[in-house]
Length: 110
Image (spheres, rainbow, N blue to C red):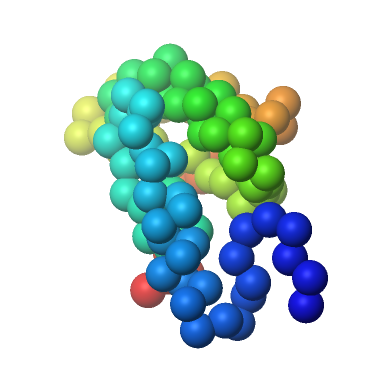
């Protein structure tokens, strides 16, 4: 198997090498985030900061020859105030693809 960049899938050291490789992706993010293997979740109260972080993530991926799958991205809004729940969700996009808003997100890592 020829791999020009990244980590070969199925290798014994693959998961460890990938974690070491991707570990600095959050160094320049304004929002809080959780990183688990190849999943990244952003948390924030400011949609503008989240939008900026999406650009930062996209640039990081371009720099390191990785791709983001916008079709696997979702946005969810949490609020304890009903008036905020009725507001239109923020317009977020990555690589020009709009990230859909949802009321339920499946976490496949669990």
